[in-house]
Amino acid sequence: MITNKRQVASKDLKPDMILAEPIYDIDGKTLFSEGLRLNLKRIERIQSLDKNTVFIEEVSYEPIKEKNTVQEHAGIFEKNAMKRKSIILNETRNEASHIVAEMLDTVLDGNSIKAEKIKRIVERMIGVILIDERVVLNLSNLSAIDDYLLSHSVNVCVLSLVAGVYLGLTQTKLMKLGSGALIHDIGKMLVPQEVYNKPDKLSEEEFKEIQQHTIYGHKILRDTLKFDSETANIALSHHERMDGLGYPHQLTKHDIPIFAKIVAVADVFDAITSNRIYCDKVDYYHGVLYLIEHADTQFDIEIVKKFITMIGYYPIGLYVKLNTGDIGQVMSKNMLCPVVRIVKDSNGQTLQNYYEIDLYKNPGISIIDLNIEEFKIRRASK
Figure 1 (cartoon, rainbow, N blue to C red):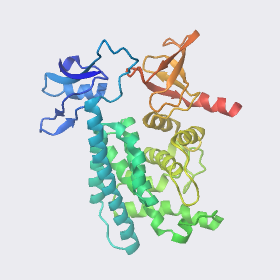
Figure 2 (figure 1 turned 60 degrees about the vertical axis):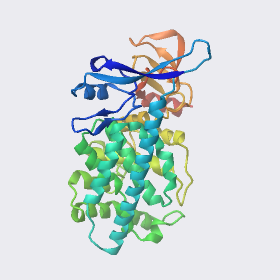
Figure 3 (figure 1 turned 90 degrees about the vertical axis):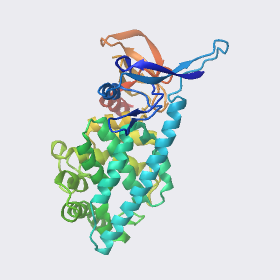
Figure 4 (figure 1 turned 180 degrees about the vertical axis):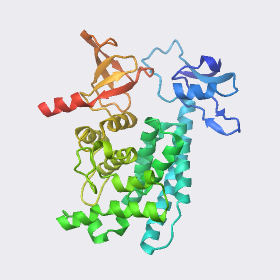
């Protein structure tokens, strides 16, 4: 395989083309790095600039070597760009963990704390994520942060922000979401540590005390840090449930703020896929199964769908809709790019003879929607 540069007119850009050179905004700042795979949103942004041509990667194959080589998801330029972005995000994560640690210590000391540090680090996170949402796939690197509460806070922030991008939130909304997500558990520092760190089953009174962390956190965000109500309500409502069985106010589906719904999914997914004092972690695949099983009771089902698409772990048997309009069933555990058995065409007609598409070998085809409801019914009937 040989990778070259090719110059194309901006108006001729197509999704899945890969940039061979950086794109700069009118201020000379890097807007998109080389190696980034284009989508419609990025193409529209490039076409809005005063830039007539763009260099893209062009892959060619030597005819003599006829082996079954498939195009990698990341070309040479893209791999380098991803590596740089991983380094940037990991540095930002580490700094975020230090800021959270400082915040937690300050709460215990009773000293004044500032919201500006949180806003600055969240703004940096958003900057990296907006360049390429796939940085979320580097979450496994977070095990480098030893303290669970610190790593959990940063993980939940990153997951929530990427989910927010997938949900189409504006940058202003992302700032509010990220700020609340980063310190959503700050109230736990006011819970007696012998209760919070207890490895055994909590008594009824101890569990009630743990639940108070949402009240404590809301007060800190609202009264001490002076965050707006949308941000402060993340700390208050991220343990509410769609069925009204959550806490502290037993809110139901339509009363729970959208930011709290997003953080609720990120919070539980990271918690169950991390080692904790009282329980071993599950892998990402089973973490996704947990989200599906509790969709529409504990979690908002539409947010769960976006979250699974974002993470890219599709359970075998899940029915999905492709960007071709076809309906199929996931047949393999391949992350991001499973094999999908097509059972209905784009007109909704059931096929007499199904066929399978390997999304890894067909990078122009992607999953755009999930049928979680039918998957739950099928699992329950087994």
